Amino acid sequence: MRSIERLLQQYGESHQNKTNVLIHAIAVPSIYFVTLGLIWSIPVPEFVAMFSVTWAHIISIPVLYYYFSLSGPIGAAMTLLTIACFGLVNLLVLAGIPVWQFCLALFIFMWVLQFIGHKIEGKKPSVF
Image 1 (cartoon, rainbow, N blue to C red):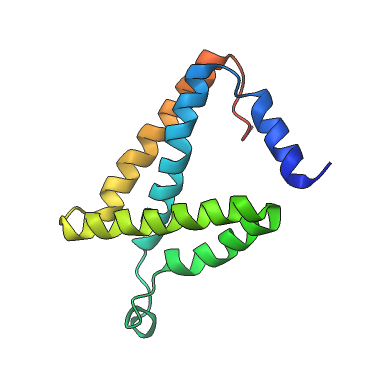
Image 2: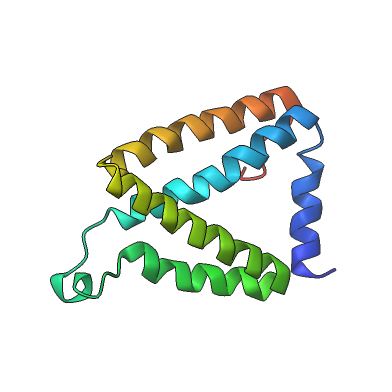
């Protein structure tokens, strides 16, 4: 069995309840967004910052490589999600909202939401 098929099968085993699936459909992309936002917030050296590059831009390269190694369509979808996430971070900046504070609060909320989903499901999160 290919790696992606095995991962999706394992994920599917602990995500069968419709409420849990809905929660995860919202929480998982949100956690990806806030993780990028938190990494984006880490200061970079001045010589890197002058190119408008952040740690989130740098880390997204191997992350996207990983997703493309699993599957071309998944890699493409994650590329689109990554672009959307960077756009949302830029909107936070333009709105004058501290990115790290917003992302930290949303990170905590989304993880709590996922644990509620797994309580409803009656199964431990796949992470464990």
